[in-house]
Amino acid sequence: MRRLPIYFLIDVSESMVGDPISQVQDGISTIIQELKSDPNSIETVWISIIVFAGEAKTIVPLQDIISFYPPKFPIGSGTSLSKGLGHLMHDLRKNLVTTSATQKGDWKPIVFLFTDGVPTDDTSIAIEEWNKNWKRTANLIAVSLGDGADKTLLGKLTGNILQLENTDASGYKEFFKWVTDSIKTSSESVEKNKSGFELANFNSENLSTIDVEKISQFNTPVDDNYVVISGMCQNTKKTYLMKYKKMIKQSSFAGVELGTKSYRLNGAFQVDSSYEELSDGVSRKFTVNTEELIGAPTCPCCGNQIAFAVCQCNQIHCIGDEDVTTCPGCGNRGRYEAGSGGFDVNRTQG
Image (cartoon, rainbow, N blue to C red; front, side, top):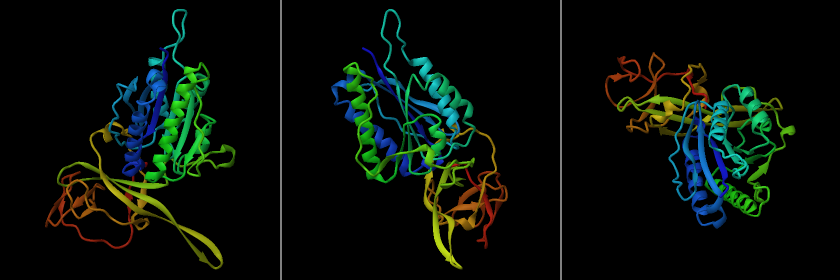
């Protein structure tokens, strides 16, 4: 039986921490449940999941949907789309069955790329390789989760670019239903010896196609839609991420409309050891001034009331009601006092 390979290439950078990655994880589970009840999909569909942040990793090797068990998604630092694409192309070369004199090969694979932000690396070589070797032999659908992705860059990969406008639970639910329906229609197409690539129709304002010619180019190496700050729990030594979402406050001065940018706390989240594995390990100096940040969380690891204390070594960590605090980064001991005015702190690439 000829296979219809479906690849999910998913951005798991720090800006995806919290609800976005939970919604993607639930959405993938829903897709699998639905496909397992579809006779055409059971016969033809094989699925793989590759995630990328600063590094890329296969978390589900290509397999039939009966054997598929939805994974837990990790989080990493950075958004290296080039490494994600490189890993995908390596996997395609290794796993696809090609047509020969004795057998028919796999159907043209379908790749769903999900990303919510701007790549933090140089993607030119990877995009050139994709266009040279894979653009005609694989179908790529790029999806911006929200409005933060670099659609101009995605347009260099594919003409199929979509944007998920509403990224709350109902928006993701509607979106993943469309993904499921698209896989089903493609599976039905190969059963009828057609093209094998037929995206489902959508009649929703929540999912829109992107006209690449009408959008501007991103030039920043850091995702400006979110500020994500990495901290370390004083008690458990575990890493946590504090996520702030961009907001623009409109005001008028002397008849001129102005927009003031700030970032409001979205939440604090503990991450596991896979965070280091999926981070590229390159030291970069990106900062944000604390006056731009609204809100401060408690520590998600131990519950300390303050998760945003900064040591003189620049390590951000939590503190409680202890008299003397020990920095989990450098081991310095001392007492903290509340400061006044803003100061710069290190931020991740988001």
